[in-house]
Image 1: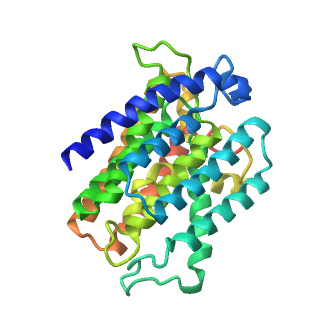
Image 2 (image 1 turned 90 degrees about the vertical axis):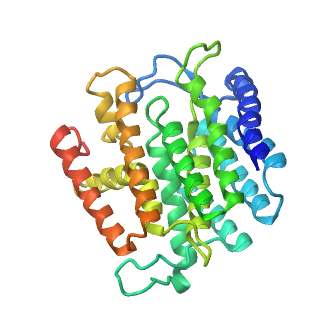
Length: 348
């Protein structure tokens, strides 16, 4: 076990570093470039092959470090299809409806080929477990699409998507470890460590000798799907490692920010899928602070939320109490953002 954990650190960092360097070099030649516009603050065109680098790292290392089985194969098929969709979207800007249809098909593939889906939501109301029955597949597809797009929406400043994912995967590894689920512990750690070389280059942490790289839609789709994949495995079945309400706490920031922004757009009569600059990272960046200050603030928020989720899970707090606390936290989050950043926090 000790050696396998050591390899989980060494192999992804080594291979990930080489692959990140490779994709920074070839990304522009294959059209994976993000150009500045009125919504983006980077000063020059930047390669968007970070998602490809992370996927390639997880795939190569997974051959040696993960248990070989049908479910792992389906994960790589589904995530590979999403990566292909992301690459096409980064190059040609695929219409939103086409992305949603493709994501739905991939989510259904996951459900039907692995048996992984959200069958029950736990004891949310104190009256027993909420069984989804015939709506399980539909609910799972919606959850997968929501997760993918929630992570896509927070990919707006350097390091935010990568560091948020890092916090979630490490929190998951703690819960899987406490539950004795070694296979998913390794899976969580593998993805987490595979993100580190990307973050190093994306944040330009010294010493650095290569140009900056972005995740792109490829990365946000991969991260969102990987998170929801592990959350479903961990929260369903008789030998679960966490409750559904704990899963909400782990993905607290992407979920709350997406919900707040979409509710604001709907309330003011705008399309919920329209792009704007009302996400928390945009609001913080517009305060003209140093680049790392918004990242630090949001990461503290994510760490605290993950800690709350882990503590609630470990101490056995009832799920109905956890979900009530989460709803209260969401209300406080929306109120705080509106008070601190009004009127810029509403859709224009």
